[in-house]
Image (cartoon, rainbow over all chains, first blue to last red; front, side, top):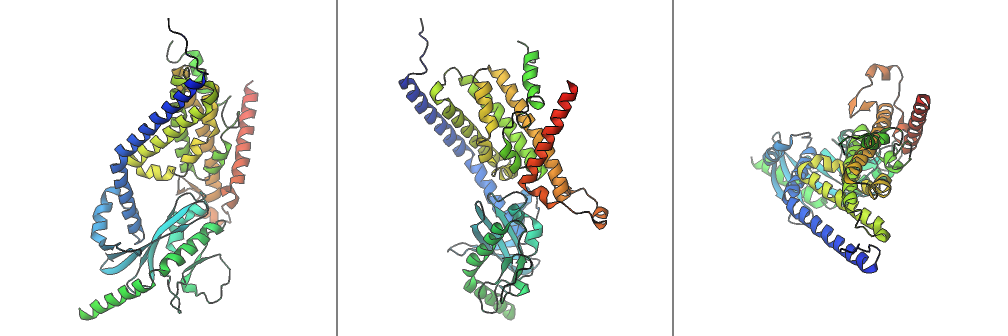
Length: 222
Length: 207
């Protein structure tokens, strides 16, 4: 009785395609909505872990990130376009500022931990969307990030001096105190980090100076 | 039909060696070059491709009689893309660390020639169970080549395996150096070539 369906008729193809798209769209929307809460929580924890990494508190167990974060980060100020996290590590005030920019293939971002003088880097953390594995992706590894420790962000002229430069390249007026080595074979990603640091940290020039003054002031009072 | 009839067994095991997607069919090479500089991403990528080929093969095999011939490639692509997106969302919710690792490869999985190749060549004509086995077989065939290539690249390029240093410091003291070339994609191509050569030599000897 049943006639075999002609799967090559135009009507069938159009209905098939339309149905398929609607079903897939509903399916994706449903899964995304159902899992959103859980994945958002994961993203939030990951962000906190990244901030802790920039304070040299790395490899903390996932369950303990929240507790550690609450213990270390005293104040989150993200009211304007220059968010800053005020933290206390081993009794000392540290500031963490987020940075973001472009690598070679996609976005790169990170957090820079700064001492209470508002100038010296305490620690750093960088990550990336899709940099080349084994080359540009090395910015997410500790050896690259550790070389920022103790470097000075601002030069004598008050502008951001902290740079990522190819080994051996001479740059006029660049102090060794503000110089970090680029990754061999990943020039464009390294340049991206360099530009990211300059662009993002320069926005914090006044804020960091202000915060640093504040801490010195409270110290004097105490 | 028994679960592992002789034919089904061949479907599962042939892609591991004689009809390997990389070594014999030379499919999926570009992703093989991209993710093999270290062992860990290679394993993650191999497993994800195995899961996705198996699932996509099953879905397409179920739909095979209804799919209009003229838009079959589009249908296959939609199925693969939807599956990959769902899997990556589930990973993001339950295995966040894996999903971060994988985020770079999601695009590579969707456009992997092996997936489209198996859907077009096998799942469109075969029943569900053989399609599932074919998907698993091809995924594993792809995975083991990736692991072999990544093993040599990470060992010789970084002196580590899965991130752990395996070459003792005394070697470096004697003047041994990591071969930075190994981290470049070009060397992956050469190692894949060597694997193909070894595999052919092995199979010819068996004949």
